[in-house]
Length: 412
Image 1 (cartoon, rainbow, N blue to C red):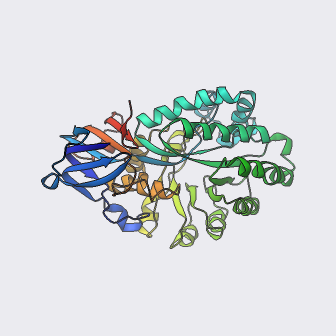
Image 2: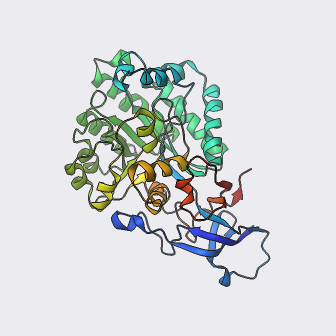
Image 3: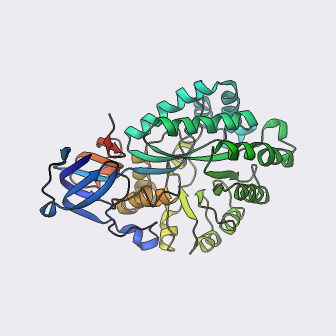
């Protein structure tokens, strides 16, 4: 089936030569074509260019996008969409002055979500999670990474990963699954870290491999959670099962976790609210993508990733939502992009690059997603009529998306 989109006011993120990511000063360059066409065959982009070069064909479907922008759908490389219930009481507790650490010490935080998830059936988890997935699709996300990590038991973690696998089978959005058993230590293992990590490695990982339930492995490398040495052990175990690492690191403290991640060739290091000069030097000229999660900083009032400092140093940067019940209960990537511009002083060009091509890189799909390139998936955002694409972050509270296309088909 051929779909021809004509009279596009501006076609964004056009890459005639495929690229994996953009770094440093290149992040400020967002290639576009004004008054453009885009031709799709089945689920792939097959041609694009200025309207004067538009082919004279009788496509199966023609869409007139006069006044509208088209860009590749958002690639959200860090979420925890699969969970049960919410943590609204903790939201109020923080307003009343409790810190994230104090809430966790009272049995809240990750352990609170783990209790709820382990009490729920797989069907219940699926039904709650699919609503969140449907929501982010409507908000323009066309690829998403989803982590486990609210099970913290053999059955709980496997249950989460099976739900992720079912979501991937049932919905047209591209989904990558990450095993995050090392999210927190369950109370029963609070004084026996070695025992819990043994459980992850010897009991859960083999089952994950047998059922092909995960693409990546993760750990919460942070003071009070998993030490650098413990995280390294988990990364090494992941490699044995073909799972590259994507690691939570430097959210609250800098403990040399980034250097360990680079040493183990992690695909991404995520959070980075606290970043030292040494961390920046370590990340230079590596294959590891730094990922910022600005809506988490917004929601729990912690520092924002120092984007300007990192980009000026020549690093790439991706943006993701961190959609989770405790610290970022939203998967709206439009808000993420706007917040990156408003609070992290990223330009709209940088933020769109970070949420598309660099986001695709951070989940290992930049060959098929993240840009308008011949041969890539036709996963698109079609906006409402706009003055310019700067309006996307500027009008941060307005829904500017008119239609979403996944795999060449409009999503109803």
